[in-house]
Length: 214
Image (cartoon, rainbow, N blue to C red):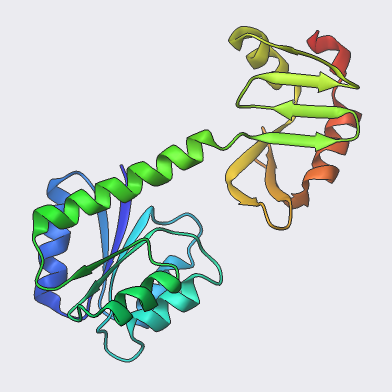
């Protein structure tokens, strides 16, 4: 179930959006001001999308969006009573994924939400999960392992057996591609925190007999 954060200072509008979104099967959390929205959005992987109104008590939506983009890439759909090109451009420049004006059709809003989520899901699925360090390459998407230039695709059963020998598992949602880090935890559940891709691959080299995969 996709999780949506609806942020709007107008209780009636917020309730209307939440009602229709829940009817579509979304898990909805509501916030009536920017401070609450920021606090909720800082929770790790808490939401799949944010519907964010510009007009909020205290901190406005643009300020909230600017702050959110310092720590999260969550898709954001802006709602505003203003329909000028300047406002739309400003929202998009700050990192909004879409921009709608009030009043709006609930059906159109839901279609836009669905489109954004599908687009983000497609991008995520197309992005290969590849770790590289020295002569070791692990491509979890293509199911390919390469050691010192030797590689072959491995079938699902072989891949599963291989990965069972690896005592770590990646927390894919916690990758930091800019800094080339990934969050890692043991299969036992122990969280090892963030480490560089190079360090993680080096630990794999130490802990796994890579020849056993061939």
